[in-house]
Amino acid sequence: MLPELKLAPLRYVLAILDSGGFHAAAKQLHRSQPAISMAVRDLEERLGQPLFEKGGGKALLTPFGRWCEPRFRELVAHHDRVCRDALAIARQQRGRVDIAAVPSVASRLMPALLAGFLEAYPGIDISLQDGHSERVNEMVLKGEVELGITSLWLPDDTLRFDALLHDDIGVVCRDDHPLAQKDALHWRALKPYTLIRNGTSRLLEGSPAAELLAHSTLYISNMISLTAMLEAGIGVTTLPRLAFQEEHQRLRFIPLATPHLERRIGLLRRARQSLSPAADAMYGYLMAQLEGSHR
Image 1 (cartoon, helix red, strand yellow):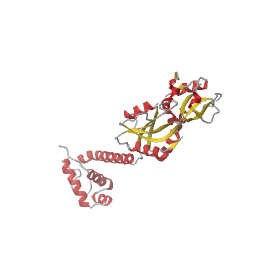
Image 2 (cartoon, one colour):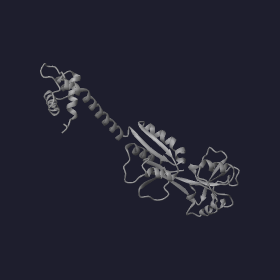
Image 3 (cartoon, rainbow, N blue to C red):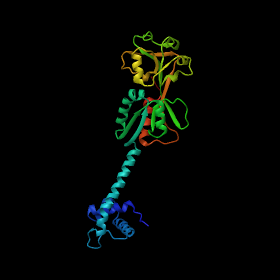
Image 4 (cartoon, one colour):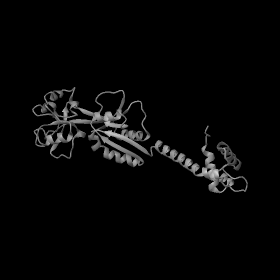
């Protein structure tokens, strides 16, 4: 049966060697010399060999002691390193958080949010991925990421969703479109025009504007392709404000006033499962920065 080695006697041995003797080690460690000597004798008994030569008044290692010394140092250093790392992670000073977000949030909100988080938690590494809402949900469920920022279309007992912000829905069209100069729109104003559906068009379902979806024959899921179609003047679409790419100067966003619709964006995590300390820090930070926000 292997002997169980306590860490304190190993530290005593190293202190004896580094300070030059039992008396100096006792003074350095704020222990009595008999206590130090007794701990070393107990360690020698557990190992079955003496560590120090007897007599002579000096702390001289036996051949077995010389073999043990570097291994004691390695063991103590490893223990201390693990303790420091564990404490740093527990205190949210180190660690890694994997997070996924829908593209509109990843590009519009996360740069400023991550800059603030890294300033507050400089030792935490961050991995950010983007994807459509179903992909973000899937990554959270599979444990590929700990946190997702997305919309939750359907309730799911395996996921916990904390709403962060409300993103108003509007109509996007080219700047020379008849609707472009309006301040707000009623859904019926869209009926004469070609509606291009996209991944967020489902937000119209269950509202009077759902009639528009039934008459739409064009669906584009990719934002780059959708933007190109809009700039070509092929039709109009509905988008959450965050998803509207303002850098496209030829496009206009007009709020949809009737019905007033919005996308709820929130933090997604696995239900009934604790977050790592790093992810918990990110969760708390995002909740503090975004909870209750309106676009």
